[in-house]
Length: 178
Image (cartoon, rainbow, N blue to C red; front, top):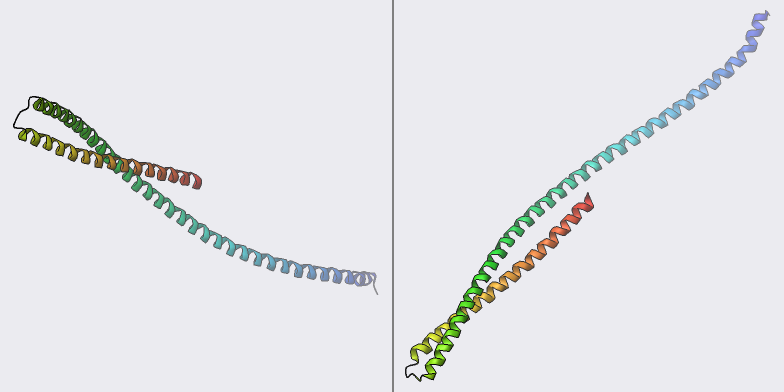
């Protein structure tokens, strides 16, 4: 045997051992790669699922925002309408108060005239009584109208308070979502 052959024979087991180690290492690396590929596929599925959930959540939030904006617009319109009605009712109440005041003055004047007529003992009290009855009936009608208008004004004020509460809650909801 030549010295070179003897050296080759001694190196052969060492090369076979290295070859086996490398094969085992390659097999292990293939398993790791397959495991990582499976993990990546699983993560990709999770990412796609999360993207779908995010899109659905964003769409839902956009719908809710549109609904809240629509509600706020309707509420604002209602508030403006009720404010206008309340202002009209207040104006009507003021006019009715003035009419009541005038009619009360006329009633007092009629009472004084009536007392004067009684004092002078006039025989014909029919027209005066008719005027007094007319004034009293007119006063009752005006008082009923004023009472109704005041009730409408109170109802309008209650509605305005309710809408103010609703708008305040809407503002709190918007702040909470932001």
